[in-house]
Length: 553
Image 1 (cartoon, rainbow, N blue to C red):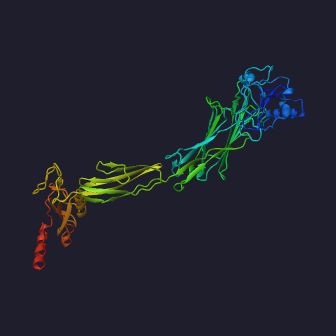
Image 2: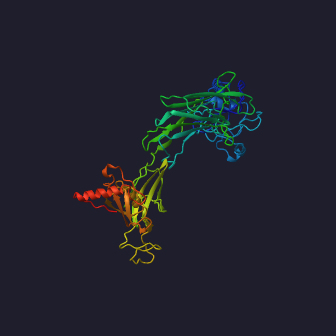
Image 3: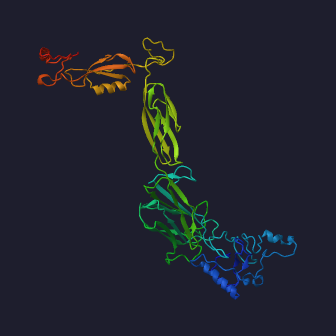
């Protein structure tokens, strides 16, 4: 690739330019040489060089013919161009200070290379890097180090990046024209083959930006988009506006998303003829004028199996250079956790020690924390904790499992009963059972008031007693009270008794509830029925007939 020291399009005068060319060694520029037109070969090279101003900036030029680098045909002598063979090194001191260059070695930096030519200011150095070109020469064009990122997810950023099935994944494609590039980019093409693990119908284009231009996209879901933006030439001495045409398309069959950026001369509706005109100039890291990005998102399919890996990359083309493929970005699908555990034993007399075995399921590597709450103020973060319940009670034990994609909680009840009075020791500070002599500071059963059970059903009474950690014993009697209704209890309501002690309840069998077809018995305030007289007559009649029955209460 050639590098001209000025931008004059008129090359009819011989030696009005200084030419560098790339030697066979990559990155090695020749010594400066005048551009010749006095020979056929020189004229051919000049014509080729002139074509750099065309829309195609990526022409690969041939190596200059010998005539172009023949010092004798130039009108001016070049300083520090060639190394004198066999002479004293000290004679070249001036050439070294001027930044001498030897053909095939280091590139010259800011060297004019010609004496006597009237030029203003420092001459620019040849471009750096290959700009994406190929062959024996380099290409005048842009250079892109591109990158792609996605939703970070959770877990190890190198090996995991967990998301849940159905989650939205956001992608960002970066493109940059390096500060060492030789020219702006007139066109940029970005292609992204969406992975099949994404639901393409949920695709949303979010943002397009470069330099100080940011284009938020109004549409939320679509398969095509286009717009145009007017921008001024990046060169402060060029008073010219360009139209930037932007187009996006999504093939919902193949899943290919494509973005195109075109710099258009509004006077011709074509790419600019000026090779140094373009919407993305060589980047200035302080301003970011040569940087751009695209943001889009789509949801992962909801039915993806556990540990599915979603990979994606993009391809970026600057002008007519070869495609540059970005890094591959990925996410891993993790299923939501399911909390579960076993307890052994699940009940017992206080104090009882319970071993908890964790049966929770989740994607390997996605676990973040276990959280146990034993219901008595105790907690644990262990996978399989062991906990002792010191006092009687019903304890709701909860396990909360937290992973990279969610939480799940499960609970179960551990029942702890009071120890029996015989052979057990009392709790410090509570009343010992009569007749026992508990050791000082050791536990005794708790004392609670017996509830009022009369009038409740058998089922209701038993449930209430068990909830208060009493044992229930049931006796039956014939009574005019409804069947299974509690008619009496021992101890009486309000009596203080130990938890775990027995309460005897008497329930009606209902056999005397409807005598002589007179309907249900009606209880008075003191438990007597309105049919008391009739009851006495019936009892007498039964006795006389030889049938007898004992009624209690």
